[in-house]
Length: 53
Image 1 (cartoon, rainbow, N blue to C red):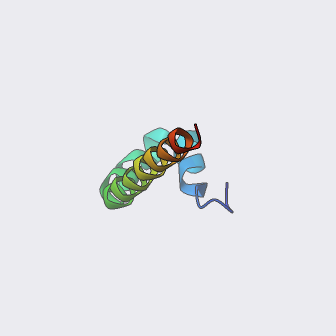
Image 2: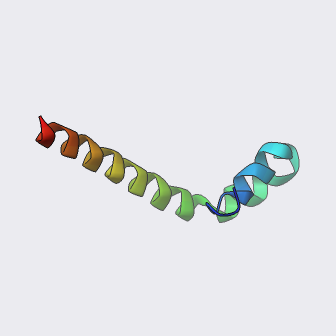
């Protein structure tokens, strides 16, 4: 988890009541960029698979 930069996610899962406000306040931009990159990589990998056929 630490190597992937997701230690914050692990801590949020362990103590959601205490930490959700902090992460809701400080992480929206990160989450937006994360999901944008995830969708882009998902689309890209799908396009690469269709090109191989």
